Amino acid sequence: MSTADRTVDVVVAGAGYSGLHAARHLVAAGLDVLVLEARDRVGGRVWTEVTPGGATVDQGGQWLGPTQDHLAALAKEFDAPTFPTWVQGANVEVRDGTRHEFHGLVPTSDADASADAIAALLDLDLLAQEVPADEPWTHPDAVGLDQRTLAAWVDENVESRAARDLIATAVLAVYGAEPSELSLLFALGYAHGGGSMSALIRTAGGAQETRFTGGAQQLALRLAGELGDRVVLEAPVVGVDHGPRGAVVTASRTAPDGSTSPWRVSARRVVVAMPPAVQARIAFDPPLPGARDQLAQHAPMGSVTKIHAVYDRPFWRDEGLSGQLIADTGTVRAVFDDSPDDASHGILMGFIAGSEDRRLEGVGPEGRRALALAELAFGFGPRAAEPAEFVEQRWSAEPFSRGGPVACFAPGLLTSCGEALRAPVGPIHWAGTETATAWSGYIDGALSSGVRAADEVVSALGAG
Amino acid sequence: MADVDEITEAYADWQVRCNGNRRLAKMLRGWDRVVHLVASDTGDGFTVTVAGSVLADLVPGLVGQPDLVVTATSEDFADLFWGDLNPSEKYVSGDIVLAGSSEDVLRLDAMSMVAFLDQ
Image 1 (cartoon, rainbow over the protein chains, first blue to last red):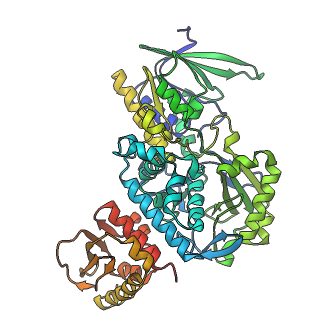
Image 2: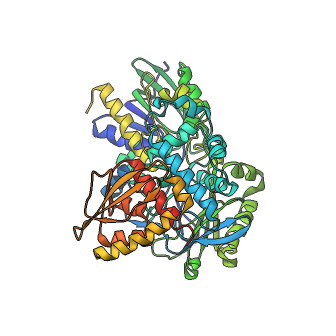
Image 3: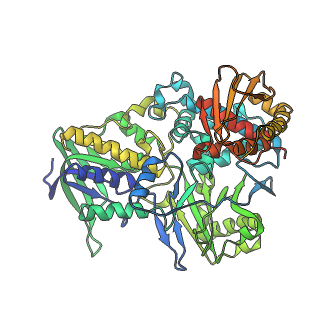
C-alpha cells in the first residue's frame, strides 16, 4: 500500500444523503471520519437551486412520503418546514394526442384501459408483496422473475395498448427507465420497498405527498454543517488500495489554479456511498470480487432530465387544474405543480425519462425547452409556453451521478450478484440508496443505508 | 357523523355499483372475505361478505369471524361508499385502520378506483 497524506478511522466516499448520514453516525460513535465528495456541493442526487429570478427549484430528489421514517425524523430534528404537494383540481391526461381532464390516480377518459391498468397494478402489487425488498433473490421463483423484464410481464398480462402506455408512463416517472430495461424481480422488490407500486406513483398518500419549504437539499447542508471540515469537496475518489487491516483511498484534489494532484488518506475502514455505476469508476486494488464488479457493470442509472418552467404565478390553479399531467407519448410524460408553498411563483416541473431522454441528447437544451414548452402549453394553455424562466437538470450528463433517479438492475443480475450488493469487501462497506432495504431509490433509503453501513463499521472496529 | 341508515344507504349504492361492474368482478375473482366495518365515533358495527365476486347486503352488527376489519369514522364510511374519498390515502394517513393482510388493503384500494371509473 502507498504512503498516506493523512490517516483517519473511516473514509466515506460520497457526500450525498447516505454518506453524510453514515459519517454522522460514525462521528457519534467516536470515530475520526473524513468525507470525500467529488462535486463542489453536498447532497448527491438532491440539489436545490435558486434561479436568477428567485425561484427555488429542486433539481433532483425532492419529496417526503408516508412511511419514509428516516427522512421524516431528520426533517423533524432539523425543524425543516414541509408542505403538501399541490393536488387540488383536475389532472390532465394526454392520450392519442387528445387532451382530457380527470380526478384521482387513474385517468378515466378510456374506462376500459384504466380498469386494465388498475387490475395490472393490483396484480403487480400482489406479486410485489411476495418479493422480499431486502433480498429479492430469496423469492422462491426469483430466477423466473429475474429472467423476465417488466415489459414482458406487461405485454403478457395487459391487453389494451392504452393501459400498457399508462403503466409505461408510471414506470418512466418512478424508475427513469423503460419497462423493457428492468428486471421484473428488481421492479417488484423496489416497489415492495416503498410499500407497493401504487404507493410509489401516488402523490397524496404516496411517495410524492410532501415537499420541503426551501428545498430538499437543506437537510444535507445541515448534516454537512455539523460535520464541518470533515467534509472535503471537489475531491473525487479515484482509487482504493485495500488489505486486511485497512485501505488507502486516493482522491483527486483540485488546487486553486485548477491543477489536480492525488491525495492519499489511510483509513481502517471505507464506506463507499454512491450508485454502483459511479463506484465502477473507482480503481480498486486488489480488484473487487467478480460478483461485486459485475453488479456495478450491470446496474446502469436511469435516464432522466428534470425540467422546471417558472411563471409569475400558478395560473393553472385559477382554471381548476392541479398542475399534474400524464401523457402516453411525447417528451414530458409526467408533470407536477412544483410551486412554493406561498405560491409566490408558479412552477411546473416535468420529467423527461428513459429512451426519450437519451434520444434528446443531440437536440440540446434549446430543443428540449421548445419540445417541453409546447407540451406544457397543450396541457395547460398558451400561457404555459411563455415562462419567465426555464431550467433543466440533465442527470445523465452529470458525471458524478451518471443518471437518475436510481440504478436499474438488468434481468438476471439480482439472482446472480444480488448478495454482493451490501456484502463488505475486506475493509470496504457499501452505502447509497441502491443498497437500502426499504425505499431504495429515495432519500429515505439513502439515509437508512448510511446508518446500516455505519453500524457495520462500528461493529467491525469495536467502537461506539 | 353518519348514522346507520345513512351508511346503509351509501353502501347500497356502492353495492349496486360494484356488483354491476364486470371489471370489478374479474378483479375480485377468488377473493372471498368476511369484512367487519367498525365506526370509531359511533361504535356501530357492520358486516360485509364478498363471495364469488359478489358483495352481499350490509348486515348490521359484527357477524361471523372476519378476515378483515376496517375501522374508520362513520362519515368516512359514508364518503367511501359514495365515492367521495380515496381509501388508500385515508389508510396511509391512519384515518382508516385495516386489520388484515396487505393483499386485502390493495384489493380494497383497487375496488374503490374501479367502482367509480365510469362516473
